[in-house]
Length: 331
Image 1 (spheres, rainbow, N blue to C red):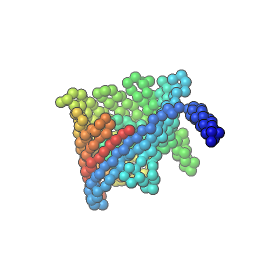
Image 2 (cartoon, one colour):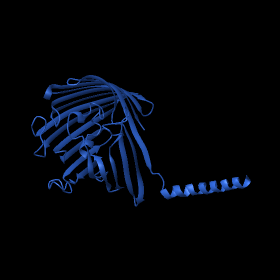
Image 3 (tube, rainbow, N blue to C red):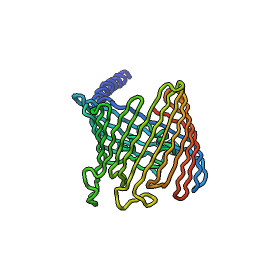
Image 4 (spheres, helix red, strand yellow):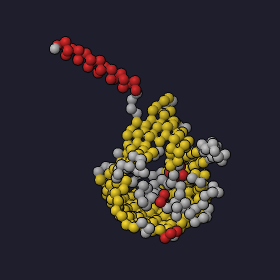
């Protein structure tokens, strides 16, 4: 009996001594697990499809990201992010869907990364879109809110002083089409000025999703307005078709959109409003979208909210309205 116990103890000591060595061989975990759960219970009134109640997962996600120091202020950066469906666990037969995923390097000269990325044109809107990931978001009424495969992107950081420049190129990767086999068949870029009170974003797309686009966005913030913070923003966007075999839904090749947004936060509450008008897109023509939201912060990070969105479009007399109550929890 004593011999068996000694044998077991010897094996345990070997295992205990091996585990730290094995962990050290793998290297330290230098990343963070993060995510966001965003679920709404909502009523939808669609002029074409009728009325329905839904439990909706609004771009909920789970990701892992980090930076590994290399040398001389240089770091390897990486991110793997997936969308998760909180309501039914499945979207079109997929349990998860890929979001921004990349690997790259970061230094004093800027940041270079490659992978599946949200294009700089979309990112140039800053905080203007107060209803991002909900039915009131910009992407429901205008084009250009894209996440694209096979992107190589450079960010200048603070090389330009208060301005930050970002440029992304997209190789065609299509050996069957001579117009889609180059090193940069698509491009997207932005130039952004961001301080505590004012934000200015300029963005462009060149042959991204068959469109050339330009966008200018400005937002202003005032502290101490009746013991709260007031933010207002404006957006203008111009688009035109870059491929001859594609047109907007009404057959035309040029489009323009305008928008205003605002948010007022006080104590643990916030009120948000947004209105966007677009003369045409790939999906809608002569469209208007208005949204209103009321938030209540829960604890340090979570938010309980309710919102209303109405979207109208002349083509096919489309009219959609949404009333929802939701819970948003980042981690």
